[in-house]
Length: 214
Image (tube, rainbow, N blue to C red; front, side, top):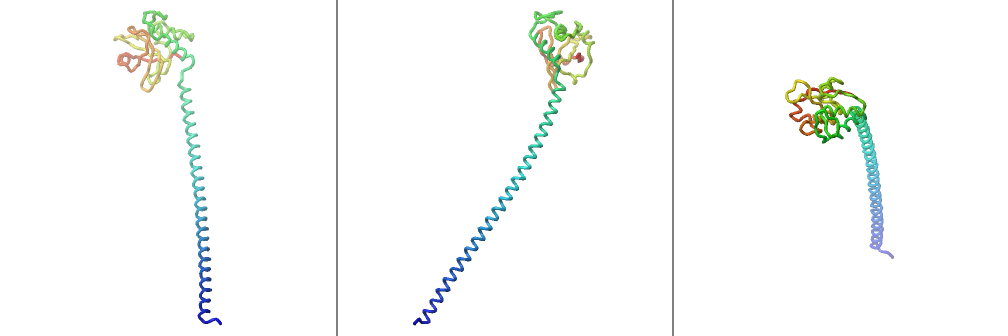
């Protein structure tokens, strides 16, 4: 026959087991809830990340599209300016002919590779494109259209009064133009056919006018 102590012990044991089971069950539920919450947070976080990434991607794409449009716009402008400012094939040919005489010695009245003067160089170069100019620099200065120095482009002519002359006595052909710099080819009495910079003190002081023939 079971004693009261035995019954108490059995009840206590049953209670302990139930309590343990209950605690374990509660713990599992809490763990599951935390796991669900964590998963939900991660999922939510991923959604945010995806949204952010998507937004960034859209912004980035928009920026790229904007940059592309800007680049195309700038390129179009540059191409337009280049086309507008680039010399014609006729002018290019005239300049190339003149450059081919680089190094030719000076000879008064000369028009060949054995020797030529300043107007002779211009005369021969333009003649290659069937443009006949007068044979002296001061007569050539009566042709074409007078332009300001900041309008000068490749193929234009520069005229000078050297050594204190009152009349134009020297001419050069513009072969390149940079910001603040104009290069021209001519035949000087001391060095023959050379390319000079209009910014050089001597030529800058002697410069008289610029003219456009074509």
